[in-house]
Amino acid sequence: MSDVQEYHDLLKEAEDVVVSALADTMDLYGVTPSVGRLYGMLYFMDEPVTLDQMSEELGMSKPTMSTSIRSLQNIDMVHKVWKKGVRKDLYEAEKDFSKSFFSFFCKKWQREISVNLEAIEEAENKLQILLNNEDVPEEIAVKAKRNLAQIIESKHYYHFLKKVVKVFDDRRIIDILNEELAKE
Image 1 (tube, helix red, strand yellow):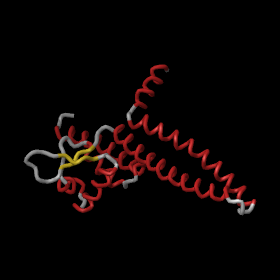
Image 2: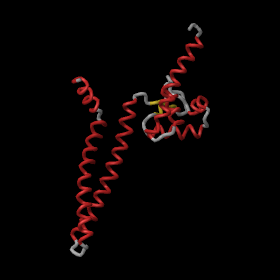
Image 3: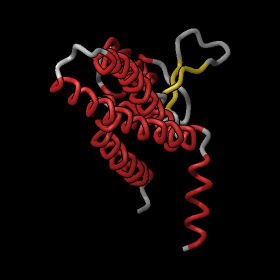
Image 4: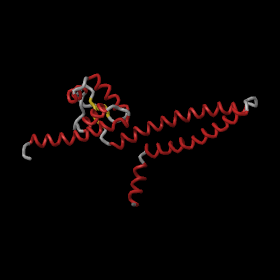
């Protein structure tokens, strides 16, 4: 290869392979492949870019681009940045995949913990009312007791998950895994 254009084309092909893979797997983060392509494009940009530049590069409308950027910001995969002398908003991709991964899944796990523990607490209160009432038919009391035992048991999982979130959130998981890998 001696032609500069050939080198440029090969570089673009390499980037396109990664962008396609990112687009194909972004459903894990709850976004569409087109949003994944946007992230992939930003991932390979050397400088932050405006919505207009993104629209031009991907051939998408500015409103679609704006919605897509918001989706990526919500999952901490894109950040708005400030640059002196530039009045338009600039955006850049989070290039540390582990940071995006940890942030995304910790948020999801924290939501699961919060929603389910709140529901368990509410259900416990209702089941206790049933169990403390002598007028409740035996069949219902038996089922309420079984349900109460079951949801109390499920709280162990959510307390475990809280610990998992903490280990991921403060990134101790990396040290733990590195220690395990060193033993191998």
